Image 1 (cartoon, rainbow, N blue to C red):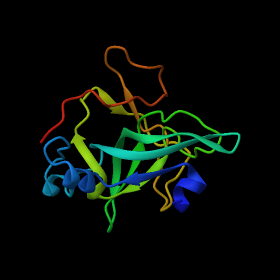
Image 2: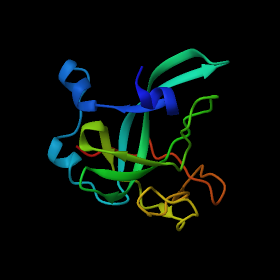
Image 3: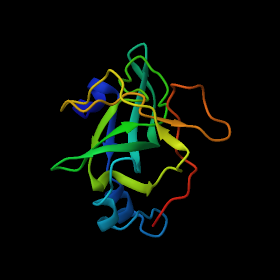
Length: 159
């Protein structure tokens, strides 16, 4: 078993590997686009999540969730999880968490609408001192309560 799955209940998986295995049905943006995201842009990543109850695995699968890029790093990006992954006794993953990822993990990329505005920096900090939590809020139709983060999926993807 993978150490990260055992410890945290999740790991990122490679969208590039999925694309290589299924090029006709699993398409991803060009590598050049995945290597050139700017802060504020969205990346859809593949999260392999294992759910445990009572210490036993009850479910395991891949969820596609959006991460908003906060900064570029030498290895790729640091972003903020913008979806609610749910809860499980072993799952150490929450909306607003910092996620470190590379271009190989991106299944899709997109730019949030202008109405998706920054709220300011929260108290949590990514591992390198970059503040992270509750950065964005969808302020358009059907928006959530002020101060909560909102899912960005559904806005048009660019290719």
